[in-house]
Amino acid sequence: MKEFCWRTKIVAMLIMVGLLAGCAGTPPMKHRFYWPPLPDDPKIEWLGAYRSQHDLPKTGSQLFFEGVFGKDDPIAFNRPSGIAADGEGLVYVCDPLNHAIVVYDLKNNKVHIFGKNLEQLFQEPMGIDIDVAGNIYVADADAKKIFIFNKDEKPVGNIDLAAFVTRPIGIAIDKERKRIIVCDSQGHKIEVIDLAGKQLFSFGKRGGEEGEFNVPAWATILKDGTIVVADSLNTRVQLFDPTGKFIRKFGTRGDNPGEFQMIKGIARDTEDHIYAVDGKGNTFSIFSPKGEYLLTVGGAFTSEQKIAPGGFLLPMGIFIDKNNTIYVVDQMNYRFQMFQYMDERYLKNHPVETGAASKE
Image (tube, rainbow, N blue to C red; front, side, top):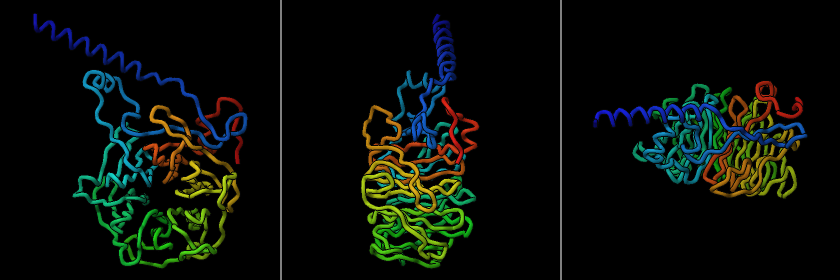
């Protein structure tokens, strides 16, 4: 009799798992969010937002076990900062107050942490980038080091910047020239080093003139090697040639389209559009390489209950992968958001539901 009861329970559990798996296999209807909105030709689409592993899709068996045993404790952000992605489903988020990197595996719908268990390796991880081999470079602002990991997240070395950098924040790897652009936010300059850590040259000093900085926080590199710097407290973007020679600047303080209140992150897509995050304005704006204003995405929003696509509260780091997927750290909403630049390839596979998006 007892054996029959247990068998009955096991069968019932398997039936329930099967039912849940069937439900999980049918995705809910999704409303798509665009910038600019229809009937204009959209250029940016919102893909999602992530606070913890609980925001990832779940299989039927996962849903069943959560119903029986409850959810695992969330792997939540404390103060997310820099972000990077490999374009293959892995997203790396620096969390300086947790002294660790939070890793989202979007292919396998898993989240884990690395760095925190390595004898408190990190002190204040802020900036992050990935080289062509998949090695991960993390700028630690307090330790004044760049920690290097292979694609399996094993430590393979570090670069000590203490002799010539005051506070490293954003870093950008120049893959073509095999060097690293380091933003020294307190030194108000840019340092250029090779991948072994040898100092090559620096440029900039504190000030408001061309080629001068007031807290340069982040950088990105255009296809021709142009170095693009987010000059945070000067509320502008500056462009330099690969030798550090000033080319141009754009942006000014204000609330109008194309103006900034406080620049945080900077990135570029495969077509060299420049994306600048306005932390205080709670948006990111898109410009041509010449600084021509194109579009603004986002606005202020804070809620622990609603999704609020494109709603930010102090956005920080931004990264654009090889697929033109855009990742933005939404710091005080304790999450990151994903968007997509709707290039020709994306539109072919994901046509808009009404009308057709134009090609640039």
